[in-house]
Length: 482
Image (cartoon, rainbow, N blue to C red; front, top):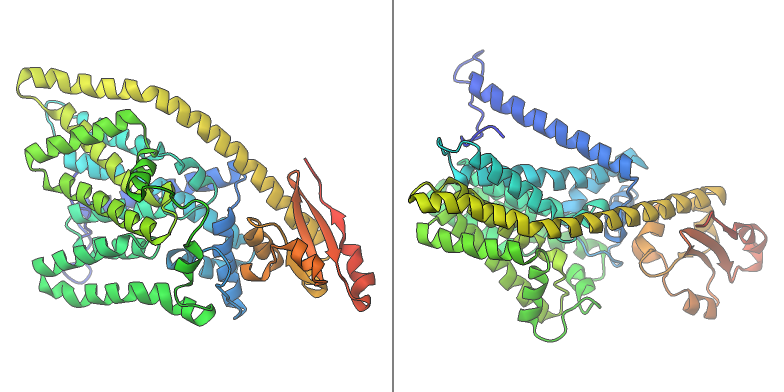
């Protein structure tokens, strides 16, 4: 972190003139930070042996199939333009596409800690009497962000939601630095990952236009590109331009009963009671101080939750990972509250009580931290088991002659939940992988069944016509198990 000044790189004021030393220092700091994040992400990917899960493998399939002019979005997962921006160019790298996306997803998640810390550092402000206070508040926020429920699992399955969190936090940081257009485009990218950001991005564009009408053409273009990115490609490559919404309807994870209470309960599940109390206290202090920045973040989080409630009423699932962006905003608010408590100096009683309140908060969060550590260990074990299963699938497919041998014998088929993994390995669209093997066998359809079993795979062929039987029956085999 390089202080609270705007991160702007001064333009050259004349031919051959160099950037000011301060600007070069800012650029060097950003480059070193980016290099450290990428290095840490590479280390995480290879040390954990992680592999993408259902959604992420589907995103990788999109990139591969576009290169073959064969994209079909009728199968899950739901369309997300943000991930497509990465998985399409990464597909040019062949099998390395998977590693490139995993590194990107992990780096995108870890970068959120940097931006969260910067925002809280800036909003805490300098305190000459306690110069350590802004750093302590920033560190508290960065660590707390990683403690959001499901966050470690989302990172280990290369999910995109932590990347959207980082884009939102980076947009707040850019706004505080006076980089309004950059903030708008960061929100634009986030809007390509989560539809809940559309109204927030639109409101920010209106505010920019009110402050400076010259921004209106650019922001109008950006807002027009959002629905185009979400609906044009599905309209060309699926049965419906609204396929993303159709696939997300009436899932098992949908809220039954009160949608309002259900969404609020899922939001609260992201953090325990001590953090919730800290958020409420920080908002109360922000109201008293008329802290517009903190209250604006709180309003954006509230708007996100209201939109999620509307989605729940429509029939979409509103699972808690769809609210980690709002949860991250609340963590940010709590971090600002910690900074305020540590920097209050008058009256003397408040100067003593502030640090004590922060210590009490940290002490109350120790059991939560232990629980998070245990869950992170479970998530890591699950990620390694999943990675072993994916590696064994790739190995058994190579052993039986590769993807072409499977496709030439019949429809690749697996169990629901493994479609995208099989699709990526076999090189077909997710919708081209069957997931009703019993029906296919009964209907005498030729299929190659890749069934997950005990961290391995059983490959079986069914209903082969006589012309293919001798060749295709040899595909039947088992991978290593256990």
